[in-house]
Image 1 (cartoon, one colour):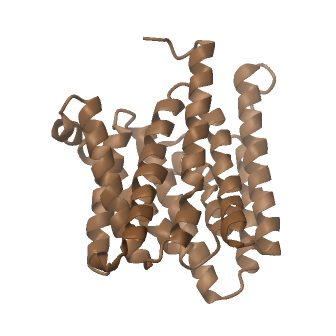
Image 2 (cartoon, one colour; image 1 turned 120 degrees about the horizontal axis):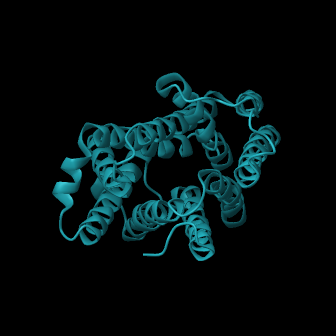
Length: 298
């Protein structure tokens, strides 16, 4: 097995995480192109994702899917609930606010995870992290202030729920590092599908929409998860987080180019503030990991 510290594996990790970010960035566009209501979108996306990841885990674990799920235990179930909540809230947010608002507010996940690690795990939060979180909060307030109506504000709030649920899953990972991510994601998709089954109208979809929802569940979510899980093991966490920002940049771009959905001025200003805080903070993490003597207390 090739060691994770070799230059080749670092490059491989970079490109795997980059590919994951590109996969995830298509979510807003696929949601806009599909003609289904939000709950039906959640249902079929979850069904396709759960089926794909179950097969993938079965192949990777040589048929031991049930054993892997049992070994994940209650931490795996807790992580799955967090993922299911995030996945559902993401689709609901997209149905009520712009793709730009949804993705940029979702980029707050690393900061919320840092706060959760401090509150629940006693992890130290550096001064620059507190500062970056404060700046990002200002950007979020600007975006919410500029939302045109109550529906959009609800969508923005749901995007914040998405970020918080993903952050909670991250805290669970830090607490129980042995939880298998793909298996937890497969269980999460199954839970989200079951939750959406009541309000959804699964048999009302057209063949075209079903193909789009299959792409949503398998290509955007499932393959993205496998690529990120594989790549994030090979590069520093800060580097993976920085590459992940690409999703928030490309997502609104695809929607603007394909269907002309443009973010408002407040979304652009608030988004620029949030992304600047995230990129600056993550770049500082990378610099410190390479030259730790530069700043040990920041």
